[in-house]
Amino acid sequence: MVSGQKGLTLVEVMISLAIFAIGILAMAAMQQVGMVAFSRAHRSNERSRQAAAQIEAVLAMDYEDPLLADVDNGYHPEAPDHGPSSLPGGHGSIEWEVDDDFPYPGTKRISVTVRAPIAGKGGAPVVYHYVKARNLR
Image 1 (tube, rainbow, N blue to C red):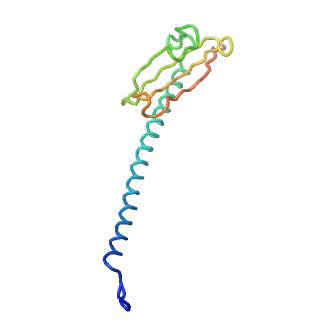
Image 2 (image 1 turned 90 degrees about the horizontal axis):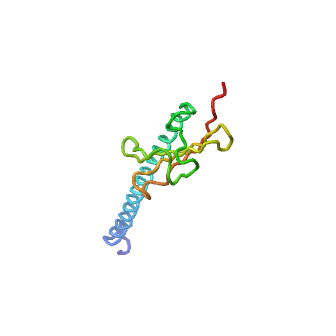
Image 3 (image 1 turned 90 degrees about the vertical axis):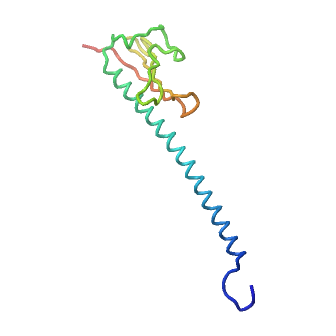
C-alpha cells in the first residue's frame, strides 16, 4: 500500500474472502452432521415410543393370554418367545420374551426389544423389562 492511501489491496480482499469461504463451508458441514444426529435421535425416539406402547398393550392383557406364554420355558432373549414383528412405517422390529415365575412365583418378567431396521445402523436396540403379576381377586 502506498503511504497516505486508505483502503485495501486486492490481495487483502482475496485473502479475507478465502477465510470467509472456509468459515461458511465449515458451518455447512456442521449443519449436515446436526441433521444426521437429529434423524438418528428421531428414529431412536420412535422405537422407544413403540416399545412403550407394546408394554402398555402387554400389561393390559390377561395373565394367561397366549401372547404372554413362556414358549421356551426360560429367559432366552436371543430367541424371543414372540416376534419379531415389523413396526409401522418400517421403523424396525419388535419382539418380547416372557419368563414365568420370575422374579417371584405368580409373576412374569416381560422384556420388550425394539430393533432398528438394519442392525448397526440407527442406534442400539431399545429394551424395556417389566414384571406382570397374576391378578389377585
